[in-house]
Amino acid sequence: MDKADFYARARHDLTGPLAGIVVVEATTTWAGPMAGCILADFGATVIKVEHPEGEIMRRVPPFIPGTRLSVMHEVVNRNKQNLSLSLKEPEGRDVFLKLCKNADVVIENFKPGTLAGWGVGYEDLRAIKSDIVYVSISGFGQFGPYSDRPGYDPIAQNFTGWSSLNGEPGGGPTKAPTFLGDDLAGLHAALGAMGALRHRDQTGEGQHVDIALVDGLIFQSNGQLTIGALGLASERWGNQFAIAAPVNAYVCTDGRVYTGVLLDSHWRSFCEHIGRHEIAGLTGVERIQRREELDQLLAAWCVVRSTSAVVDTLNALGLAVTRVNSFAEAAQDVHIKTRDMLQPTTLSDGVEAPLTGPAAKFSRTPIRVRTPAPPLGEHTEPLLGGLGYSQAEIAELRRRRII
Image (cartoon, rainbow, N blue to C red; front, top):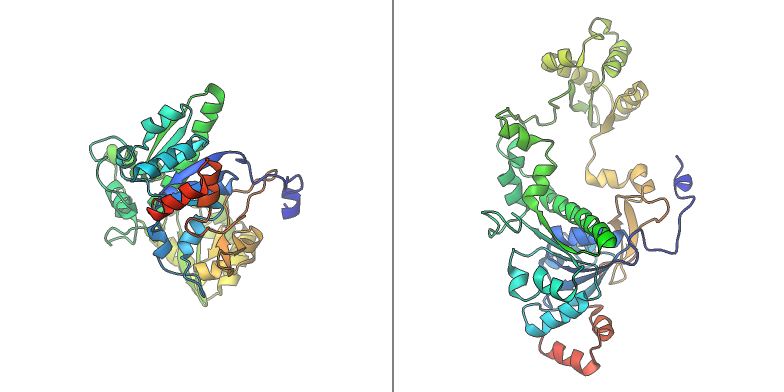
C-alpha cells in the first residue's frame, strides 16, 4: 500500500484518537514517562508534574549535540506540558488535587505508598473525583510480599528469569540493552488506562490500575513462566531459534545477515536454489534434529556473498532476512524514514533533532511528535492561573520553592 493511500481519509483537526482526554503524570525516569508519552502521542493532553529541581532523566547522557538536552528525556517527554511542583509540601498537594479534579487519568511511578503518604494517593483522588482512573507503576506492584521493595528495570529482568535466558549458550545471565521492563510496564500502563477509561465511559466508575515491571516482563515472555511452573526445560539459544532451524546471524563478505527457515516450503525453495535436492524434503522437526549441520550449510552459503546479495536472493525466494544493522545504520534506512520513525523536531532551545516517532499508525486520526519536551515548569503559570491562582499567590509559591 502506498503511504498516501493509507492516510487518504485522515483528519487533521485532532491531535489523535485520545483528543480531549486529560492526563496528569507524576512520574520520573522511564516507565511512568513512557506511559504518559504513549497517551500524549495518541493525542491526550498530558501534564507532567515534575519536582522543581528537575528529574534525573534531564541529566542523563547522551546529550543532543550542541545542547545540554538529554536524548532520552527529549524522546519520552515530547507532546507534554510541564508543571514544576513539590508534592511533598501541603501547598503542592493542594495544587495537585485541584489539577486532578479536571483530569481523566493520573499516572504515577513512585514506590507504593509514597503518594498516599503525601496525601495524593488513589483514595485521596477518589474522594474528590470518584471516576478518576489512577495508574500506579512500580517494580513489584501495589500488593504482594515484595511490594515494598524498590524495583528498577534490571532488577525486574533478573527477578523474573528473563535475564537467565538472554545471551549466548553457556554464558551467564544478561540484561537487555534497553529498558525493556520499563518499556513494557509503560505500554501496559497506557493500555490499562485506556481499558479503564472505556469502563468509566460505560459505567461512570473509576478505578486503580496496578502495573508491575515484573508482571509486564513475565506476561511478554512467551509462556516461560508456565514452562517453568511445569518443570519443563528452558534453554538459552542466543541467535538461534528453539522452534526452527536453521536460524542464526550469518557472516557475509561485508557484514552479517539474520535469517532462517520456519516453513517447509521455504526450505524446499532454498534447497532447490542451491541444488541440494536430496535434503529439500526435510520437515521442520527433522531440520531441528539436524540443526548444527544445516546451520553450517547456510553459514557456508552466506560467507562468500555480500549482505545485499543474500538479502535480495532470500527475499526473492520468500524467506525472511535482514542485514544486521546498528541503530545508526537503521536510522539511515529509507523504510525507517518512510514510516516516520524519525521526525525532525525543533527542541525547546531552537535546535532541530530527529526524535523517535510513535509506533502506532492511525489512518483516520494520524499522530506525530507535535511539540518538544518542555523546559522545566514551562506551563506552571498558565496552569495555575487556570486553577484560579493569582499572580501574587503564584509568586509566593515560587518564593517558597513549591513550584
